[in-house]
Length: 448
Image (cartoon, rainbow, N blue to C red; front, side, top):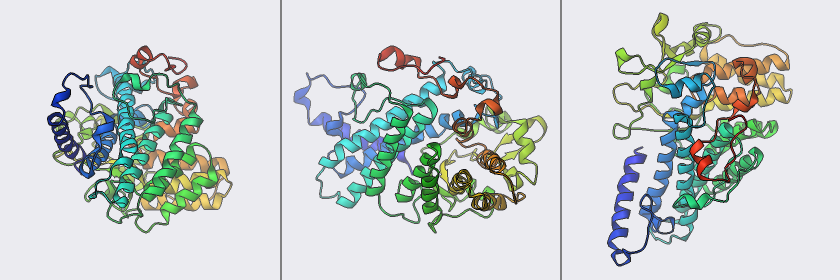
């Protein structure tokens, strides 16, 4: 889906119509970098353009930098380039002006603002070309996008400022103090509840737009992070039971043709005109890449062990000191999807939650479904602690180059043991220094 191109085209037309219709107001001061939210969404066309703009916001931070935050900071991926911003992440010595964390933080808030504009402006639209069903769908998508964005902020930065109304300039968020982590997650839940009520039942062919199952999947993940084990089982099961979703028989298939496989619960798609060039940081220079991110020696060892990695060795290529990751592999056309939620994650969410509830047999069953698909050796028994550790290892390998490992180590409080990062202050990223300077209501995370 060409989220970006469609959004730019529609927005350009909207700006032109606004300019032509308001020449007599040329003396009024208007923001020069935004369309006022009160006038941006006026009919079916602008409503559709606005929601595509919100999806484009997700693309802007999920096509590269957010995945980097979830990988290079942990133990599966290391730094192999020359740029200091990546080295800082790799060493978990991140200053408040790190280019990547600043970019992600600001892009997420920009995405939230786009969703806020839809939520605020859409209810008043009365275009006969926009029936109530479509109107509900667009509004539900906006609530889901805001939920996902705040979830991603919370697990990276902790409790944040909850900006729930569209803003045209910096003054719009002044006076909003940081919420607690629990309050931030409460807002995520509230948005997911709204989204589920508004969104349509699943279309079997749609995997790159929010639907009811998408909200349930994120709700399962949210409950895992909040340690609401029974609810995590409930919502994971509701997604797993949908016939629309199934593990592909060959692990490699989900990230090679065709995209939008049965594995995918939610992904962001790209095209030749709306490219995702993230492959370049994984590939060596001989293949056109910068080779900035490199699989760690420990991951290579695990993934090449048939009993552990099984068919997941297809995630890497090369030999010796030149092993590289190939999850993002469309080197010629740059159209790799961003994989946000896969059905494999729902099985492992349910496995972990069952283990925490002491349903060890159920946990092993779900864990072994993932191991069997990969051709890895099944786990037949174990204590609760051993099974939880096996699930953690499975997550690490199954999603080796997706935005999971760092966040999993933090939420399970294993970042100290695994990474040697015993100062828990550094389990959160720093709030950008520029935001601290510009807004006295923004309090920096401890340690920065």
